[in-house]
Structures are given as C-alpha cells and as structure tokens.
Image (cartoon, rainbow, N blue to C red; front, side, top):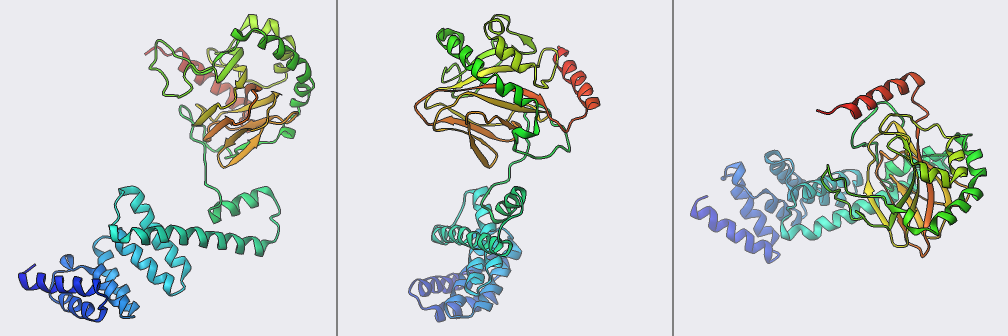
Length: 376
C-alpha cells in the first residue's frame, strides 16, 4: 500500500471513529477502486456503508471479504447483523452461528467485535426459543416422547448424544439412552427379591471393609486418569468380576445371587458376567464418560435410594427411586452424582442388548474371548 493510500485509509479510520460515516464511505469507496482486492479493508467499508444507511452496499462489501476468506469472523458477524436488521432471522442465525463456530475453532475474534459476537449468541438463543414455541404451538401436544425429543433436538433445547464406545462398536443399533423396565419381564422377580437384598446389604455394610473403591490401579497398566481413583466415594461389592464368581461375597448374599440368575447376562470368558453393588457416598460425582461396548446395556436395580442422586445419560436425567430399575446404554456419554446427604446403592449388572440376535451373540462371545486370549 502506497503512502497516499495509507494516508487516505488513516483518514477513513478517523472518520469512522468520529461518526462521520459519509466521509469514511467516500474515502473507502475510492480505495476499493484502486487497491488490490486482498489489501482492501472490506469490513471497514461495510461499516461505513451501513452507517450511511446503504445496507445493500455494506452486504456487497462483506461478500467481497468472504470470497477471500469464507470463515472471516468479522465479516460473518457483520453479515449476520445486516440480516438481523432486515428481519431475516434464519439468515442472521446462520451467519452468527458460523462466526461462533469459527471462534470456537480458532479462539480468535477482533476485540472491537466481541460485543457483537456475544449479541450473536443471545440472538441465536432467543430465536431458538421462539422457534421451539412455534413448533410446539403448531403441533399442540407431541403424540409421543420420541416426537417431543426430536423437536427438542431440532430447536436446540437438547444436545445430540450418540453411542461412542471406547473399545468396540457394533453397527446399526438403535440410539436409545434409557430403556423402560416394562420391556424386560425378567426384572419383576428381581424386584421381588429387593427386600431380602436390602437385608443382605445391611449385613455387609456392617463390615465396612467389604466395599472397595470402584476405580483402582492395575500394576500392569497406567493409572486411570480419574478423580475417583482409589476413592471410596464410589465403591463396589463384587458378585461377578471378569467373568468369575466372587465366591465369598456370593455366599454371603444368596438372595442377590438368585436375583442375578434371572438376568440375561453375557457369558464371556475373562470378561463377563459383571455384577456388583455400586455405592455412591454423599458428594460423589462420577464424571462424564463412555463405556467400552455398545453390545450391552447396564441395569441398576435400586437397593437403597437417597434424595439428590441422579444419573444423566446423554441429554436425559433420571433419579433412582424404589422399585424403578434404570436400564441404559453406557456407550452414550453418562455421569452420576450424589448431591444429597445419604449413600445410594444399586445392584449393577450388564445384559445383552435385546436387538442383538442369538447368532450374533455367539459370534460376539467368540470375538471377545479371542481378544481376551490375545497376548501379542
């Protein structure tokens, strides 16, 4: 840029700062006809054109900038503001969202446009709220929970969570966060045994050392990066572990073992069944994480419930209540917390997903046992 061009640009900047949009626009229009496209401050020209009320010219200037860099945050924000002024909510939202996405990706935003970026966030949130109201007003009452869920996702009221197992992914399974207890008739005889299991739990808890931290160290592996490592705030009393019965614990709790016999637990050498009492002490928080497999579901049969305890799977939160098992896909992000003042204990075990056929289960057992047997 020549000295003359630089002087005119400085004068345009001074005019913009002083609110003299007409002079700034005149100076910048002249520069636009003389400077190479990539040297022209198109956003500045756009602000000047907007200041004199020529939004069409402002939009055209921003289009020139976006041809050079289609993800320029400043141009995207200014374009969004122009569409907002024109009353085009969808277009404004799309440009504001693109700017927000780019800022999230790169972390950069011109200081003078930070307020506009925050305005864009508020605009999108408010337009999403109005959008949801419009949809629900038109539909009146959603005919099913799945329709309501779909509308919440469409309007941005809920975030989309999908299966992301950390080790093994089985394709084409339904993306369900929770299953309902009445889908599994074998849960009824398990629930009938809860009073006896609660008595067994009372006896075991009298011997506090029988529970051990759930997250522990394996000398042959790096220590887990988990805040609850070796912490009794999340602890377990094992009945089946790594496919083997914990004989002493099973002998102490015959009603619990009878209950587990009703469940279609996988039988995989070295791996399954897995079953234990899972206890959360007051203040415990199991942070968001994904399970290893999506070929199973996790069952929680409440043995001792407590106020303030919750389980989030994906975008749905449920509490443990007496007589209401929770069955969920742990390959979807989930977390649990005890925000109350009493301990919460459930009987936790895994079952085959009902959508997996007997033939597929046989093949999966062979696959998992082969993985377990591989020694490198």
